[in-house]
Image (spheres, each protein chain N blue to C red):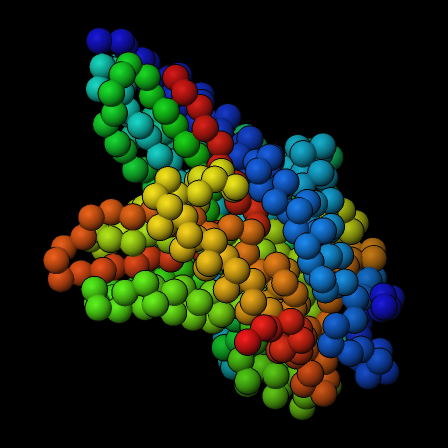
Length: 183
Length: 281
């Protein structure tokens, strides 16, 4: 079933999400991938203020294509989440509630999702044009020098994702594979 | 000798970079359409339908299918009766990549060193160029943008000849199983068997360029391709790893003679955005 969820995420909204649910996200989300994560975590460890308030927020692991004239953003599908595993728990301990990416997460991240009442969504990898259609506003708010790896503030409308890991630690990648595996 | 000016090559490369990233090849599209029919998982079916919608949006709006517009891999088949004039051939190719990635609003995904500063080169150069000298007076260019997500799930094994075909199968299935959802399934699996380490990885990559539905001309190899596709699709990974029957759209194997002591096997994984575009000058 498809659920409509607004950001920032509330505990009630997260409690209602189960692995396998299709969700349409509405509101503000932030982008961040490898280089931005390294800097954000460095700032947390040095006691510096982050360029955005991440409490209740979602970080989307994406490095978009540049926008053509008249476009809000270029193609903007997810990148592989595993590369952010080294940083995700530190951000969640600082208030981050959700992540959007694609692919497997480490046990440490799953444990952090359970502990912090968070959620891991997947967007369709390789569907960057389709996903860009749901992004209504995009603005670089930090780390301009990183080019496609800069942090963007996005306003999304009915942005399609699937719940992969819910707050009980259920993992769609495991559940789905077990269901369809032969032999 | 037929003379070809490097300026023509730059223009063709620019066009190929843009078109390869905006338009999914017909065989891949057809394989995805067939996959919608075959997929038993309702969620898997929905995902493949979304992937096909994405192809249509990219084509109609002239935008990249995937934001990871890759490193520009260029296969150059240079006719031995061609004389390239007007400048440096590889500089001309890189200039084409530069123009294509800037003018086509493609993402620049190349960093100038792999483990120190990792500073973006800003124009997606340098291209990865593989040149073969062939008969004739033409130049064939194949431009294959390669994304990082699927490339990172690729693998190489220096198997023993005694490992045999069972050893090859085991390595392929383990590699695909371990990759799981990471390389954006449904995937295409390019496999190189034989040669030296650089040859086996090169033929694995070339295997990805083959049209889906075509098999290796050697019937023994073709049989292995079909068996491996069937086995991979029993893993249950499914589209995007959400579970399902369609994990791979195709398995393509290329082989090369090997050393008496060696049986190298390379697996190059390709996501469903299997982009490549050819031109002949």
